[in-house]
Amino acid sequence: MNCPKCGATSRVTTTEQLQTYVRRYRKCTNCKYKFVTHQNLEEYVSKFDENGRPRKKARAAKLTIDDVKRIRAAAAEGKSTFECSLECECDCTVSTAYKVITGRTWAWLK
Image 1 (cartoon, rainbow, N blue to C red):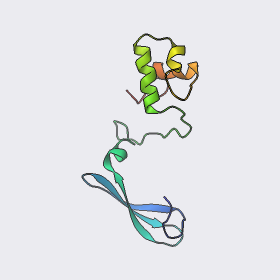
Image 2 (image 1 turned 135 degrees about the vertical axis):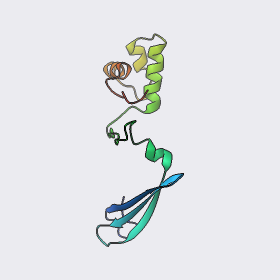
Image 3 (image 1 turned 90 degrees about the horizontal axis):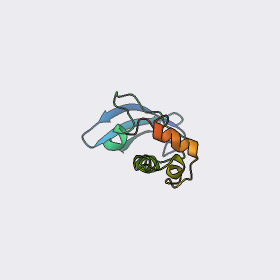
């Protein structure tokens, strides 16, 4: 996160988990300005897997969670892999749909 004062990067000094949100105390690496940010607890928890480890973020992911659910629902109805690939809005390839259906990608999403 960038500093609201000078725009440089900041570092988290302390994190507190409260009932409905997570509070982070941050300090700018450039001007040493201290500030606080808040994050919804549900968003914070969804970033971790069932073992408490941080989930790896797929930065180049073209599929969304809804796309994956649509592809898997179409496969459960008995549609072919080609038909399943047409279910998502981003026009994924047949091989991508196959990997989603078999769990080679997006395996963490049940």
